[in-house]
Image 1: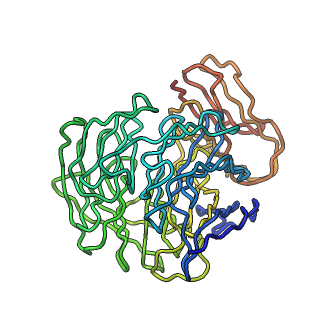
Image 2: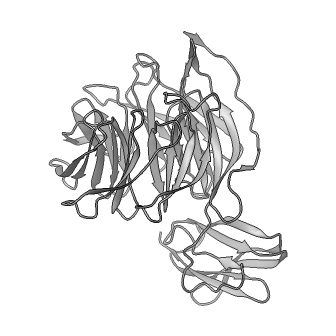
Image 3: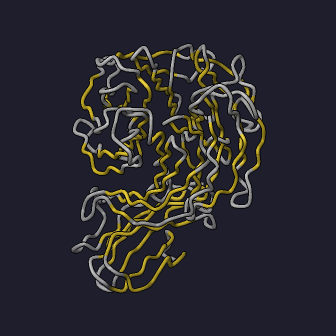
Length: 453
């Protein structure tokens, strides 16, 4: 097996928008390549990708690579550091990454350097990344997957006999507090509800993990297509889950779980390569890493009728149903950036342009002059404001407090027509109600912002 020794590809901005006009779109921004292994016709080394937003609103991608874990500043694709990781006993170099506060946690299916649960301290970005150490997740130091319930501060680590539950009250010294005794390949935990994809059993299960010592299974559902149930992710309202099956010709499925006594399959999707890997939900969109078909985006405003709105092929050679191309996708940034990772060692950066259709009823709308509700709201301390300008004109966007006092003028300038997004960082301001006001001399649009620290 021969290690490829190419240098990183420099940052390239192409600006290739897949869908224009009034549809959501993915815009390709740039790409990096990391050292990989080559054997015959196969290349491996790249694995999953996650992200981290600094308190200042700067986005970073965190990717599993052949050498370990890479931390990359997204705006210019500067590699801040590559933390060495284990490399033995797994040709695919499986790594999974999640964040909690300013820490990143990394599982590996390999033995060797820094084996176990790796912990990275990200608070010193952009200057450096501090490697805290590796936590011993015995009896087996290897793990395929993890999830962190950020609302409660617990991590869930895949192990041979179930899911190890770790208390992250001290983020640098996790404590083993329980186990979910369920077979599994993938897990997502939110607000003490665990969604488990059980792999070869072609089953997904949902658990109440309020009691870490005694988790309770709420429901177990078998897929009718009997594929390898690989990944699961709930919608933001918790009424639906999306599952993928890592088996040829098995669809991504959307399930109505609003009544756990009557779970129903309501929709399916499959890209041309007939093999999906992972799905993530952000807002009303599902982002799918679809191996050789690349990354696909579905509009799931109506989960019973998903609509494909964007696709970007990150793997040019073919669309065969094989383990190549897009491994991971991360759409959970604060500014609409989307990160994808390829098995062949590529990190891709996109900008997702979401055309807002659900305008707050208090929004004043004249022609195409629009200020949408900020997202997230409430927020702490960074939120995104999106607006639309129909023609070249002088426009101002300002923030006022509840008493009507001007807090900050974000801009006051002549703008070209288009749809825009901008971040407001309220770290210097106290909790409370604020108002964003977009004006053009004739029209005035107001949105209420809630800052909760």
